[in-house]
Length: 438
Image (tube, rainbow, N blue to C red; front, side, top):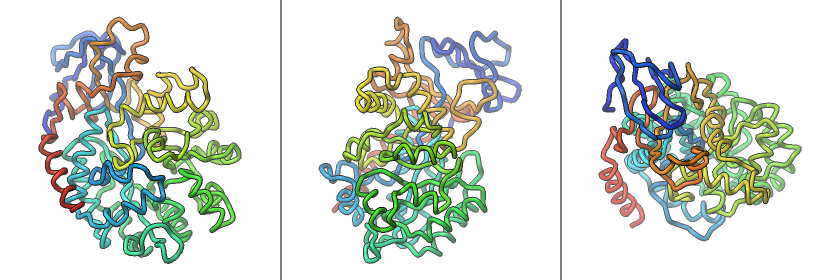
């Protein structure tokens, strides 16, 4: 990645931001905020009138779905999956790499410094697909939570995915260990154990995955309570609701976060909240697939960390995280019919600190001395006369970052991604998508 950090002994200082003032960075950490006196060795980046926030944290994504955006546009989740499973099964490792490059670059351009990718489609069991995603993250320069997803319950056994798309349980567990051994460093790459969903996995895979994750000190992630169809599947198959099964499988804890979490009852919140189980809220995808309105304010009140997620670009074609701030705010206000149900500063907290809490990142997500210097600098030329600058930022219009720093290193500079040529990456992806569909 271009743009080295300041030489040893010097600071990188972001000067002139309207909010929160100056920011000084040294050795990848925030060392001062506010009005900062200059020092001789400072490297200065002018941010006059701009807004600096902690980098956004994307808690749920499917990067490979950049290959199939704009398809199955009138379907609910189950029909949408059935329509796309056969296409995803034709993807190559290079297809996924091309999609990951574009997906991660678009996230960086919209302020994201950490992305959680839930990849559960492994045609032929070729787990080098995970190497390709890690390589893409290294090129772009943002942190990656790599969820080694999996499915082992095909349609012949009562699952939703076709039999040719599922994997053997022992192969999944062996691959998960191998992927963690190859890539988990606890800093730029965190490997996550992530069986896909209640309607695509066996009880045995869920139980053994939880055991494996805790043996290796890895986090756990899955889809849960996304649709009424999923709830009915659990009631018919197990005689219990999804959260009850989750608890039985050993999946309730502060090392677990769940994608969507829409249809969670008060009683279930009372189980998940005290345990610190997190929720990845994906408001645009939920709207696109008509899955429902997540009870974000109730979940937060119950003690669940809540972060934001883009979800796949086959169900949220924008592919950037910044628009989800406004969408989350609007969704909460529509659900509660209350104009103050969720405020701009709260939704920004969800997109930063809340996401970091979901992912177990204790040193990110907050503008504070000592925290990691994962920072987004937003153009503020149209916010100069606003009394509520964060409100103006969140409520729009959508914007891309002027600068983005991960661990104090520049990833975007003056609106330009440093790690790759994004236009060329988009062209390469478009050609691969055409071939895939042909």
